[in-house]
Length: 225
Picture 1: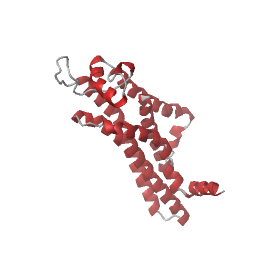
Picture 2: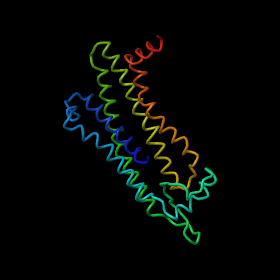
Picture 3: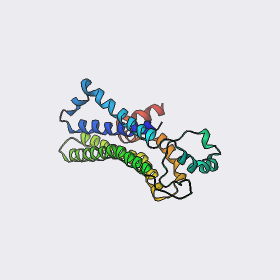
Picture 4: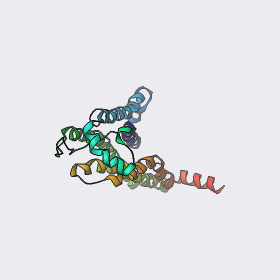
């Protein structure tokens, strides 16, 4: 399940690259043809494997973390931690004497998570921003009113589809990873973030369906019938 999040964010990055190549009209879509397609399909699996590997090796279960979260799991979920499986970090656990210590392993894992997440985040920002400038330039060209109207629709859809993964995936998950470092209680965010993550696949296509006339008219026509 942890690996699926890594697959999701890298799949989004590949989607943004494809859309940028399509907008550039420089023939780069040939890189998505049959002979190269397997490479693009592998990228999300590699991202998922990297995320899973960090969870499995660095954030795996151990006695110190188990004792650290035992009471919290009991209080919030009424479960015994010994009957649960988990992956997590304890940045400032307690040693055998009850003294708070710094967990280097957790900070290393956080750095690895941050690196895995930063790569697709930069791709989304770069490809989304460049696509935004391309469509904006097309709007200034002396094309027909129909063409400009279509470009404006795509422009609005692009802005929305760039903002959606940033605010529904990257920022929420980045926040819930960073706050524990400063010992800020973010337990209340866990349920909303899980809901938002599940909601993303349904929300992502909505800007295109709403802003682009072809799709919006077809949907309203079907609903009207």
